[in-house]
Amino acid sequence: MSTFSTPQKSGSLARIRRLASSLANGKAYERRPDVEAEIQRVLRLHQSAWIAEAEDLQNETLVFLIRQIDRGDEELFGRLLQELSKRTVRIASRWAQGLDPIAAEEIVLRVEMQILELVLAETASRQSDFLEVAFGKAVEVRTINAVRNHNGSAMGRRAEIVADTPGDDGDEFDEMERPLGLAVDDRPGPEAILLQLEDEARRDEWIQKAYDAVRDLRHLEAVILHYGCGWPITSKDPSKPDLARHFGAKPRQIKYWIATALEAMREAIGEQK
Amino acid sequence: MTSSNVLFEDVLDALKLEESRPSYAALLRWSERYPQYREALAEFFATWAIQAEQPQQVALDEERLADRGVSHALKILRRQDRVSPAGAIEPVAPFDQLVLTAIYLLRGEGYSVNITDKVGEMSGTSVMLASTFASLDRLESRGLISSLVADETEPEGRTRRYFTVTLAGERALAQAKETSKLLADFLGDLA
Figure (tube, helix red, strand yellow):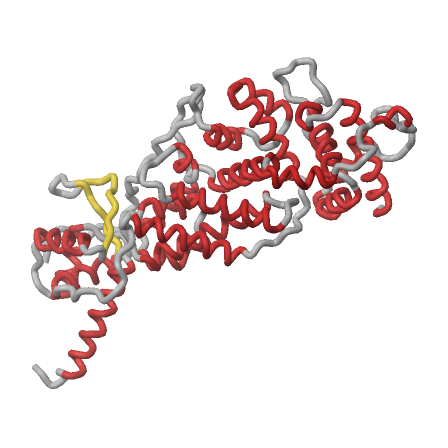
């Protein structure tokens, strides 16, 4: 028998591959401490335990393990990839709402493939390393960006053209009884309406009502961007984005859209109360 | 990442780490940092704001989409020659079986010294550390075990490596166990 003694259970740490990429300020990408701790624990398990635990592992740990295996069993790769793909689809689906189901599925599938190709890339990149830092955010940005591209495409624009209706140019805006910002009645104003949309318990119900009530989605988008995010309707500084440039519409038209959308939302939400 | 040749996707990843909401103030900040992406950033922020408010209506077939992704990923892995061929596992030599068993029983805490101890304990014989090292190399090159380097050194000054059993290693152990059982059954009378 060997003369060396067997030590007690080791508390030593494995040397885990460091992420090579860095942030804008030069700080190296780092995994979260809880992810590092989970990786340390899982690396000490036999591979059959990786499969058994896959469902409970954090996204970033799954990415690390898949990237870590130089050569492995198809069953092992398959199970880890299946779990990661399911989560990717789930996150991407959340951000691909509001499109027709075929477009939504196409976008989700494209994002899933992009993510998997980054995970399996033979050369590490800033994007592939980012998956071990904030996997959910990586999926989110790719989905939002894919939706942005879709909306800018011929297919995406078609939906807007169909929704474009005559009398939508705000010419009658001057004749409206309650132009936006001058409303003097006691009904909820834009902030109140948006606050109601923040009501977590009934949020989905309010949002659904608002979407159902507004005739043209661009009208609702203008409300969200203007009141929810603070976009100005128009800006004198051409380097600053504004709603008129974003929608390619006249400021008067945007004001009309917002007023119309708020009116519809007021009525819809009012009916619910 | 302030250089002008940074990829738009890298900018998006970085901004998502810093910003929790698609506010106009955040948009102006990022447009100033990356003026070459001013228009794309404005579109991205607008899409982000709008998608965040979308009611959850479309439910996609998660399993089917995940299966398509996995199939695509496995094709990439095969092209990269990272998937071990499925099929029968070549028999493992008796000493290597003992080393594999020791690693399995030590549950991730096995390194050369205590694996040697464990093999000695199981076989009731004196085991040379060099024999264990040779066996570990054989088992690892066959993909039956994997190792990770720890921030510790062995008594001889080597970097300590901890070993775990791969799926193929577990199959090899199961196969060895089955063979041993058969032998024991058929050769029950043999002294």
